[in-house]
Image 1 (cartoon, rainbow, N blue to C red):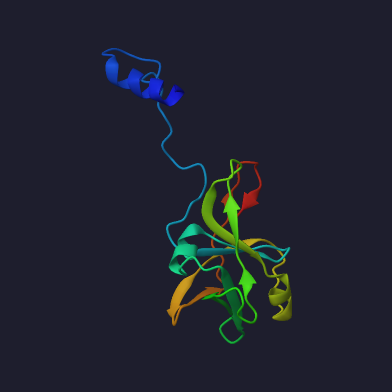
Image 2: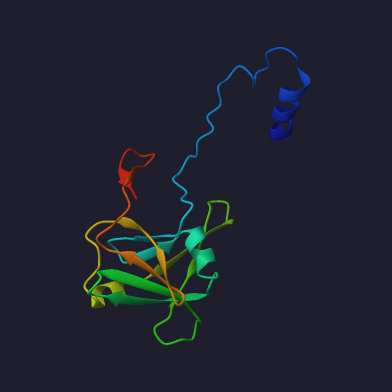
Length: 153
């Protein structure tokens, strides 16, 4: 109801309205990215943004591999019952809506390869062919400021 009133107020009046008095911020409130990303946390969680999930075909699970020579973690879509598959959990808003992002707990895999991070980082995922997306551990994305004053990826 309030949204409808605001739209009506902006279209029906010739003079200044409560809505027209303000310069309304049009930037985003969070750093949604238009390319596939994967965030790694100190605790061993991995989160794929919605773009990555769609690029991978919205799979129920992921397989994680490591290329020590290139310093890259590889991800590919997997079926739930495939050996080594890690199930993806949907990320939800406080209201319960699916954000499109998916997370998984991958501490065992990251620790096995010795790549469990000391701090949280977000990485670009590059499509390297064959259904594999890779992130380079030596190339995290720049961190952005969080709304709480700390830094986040």
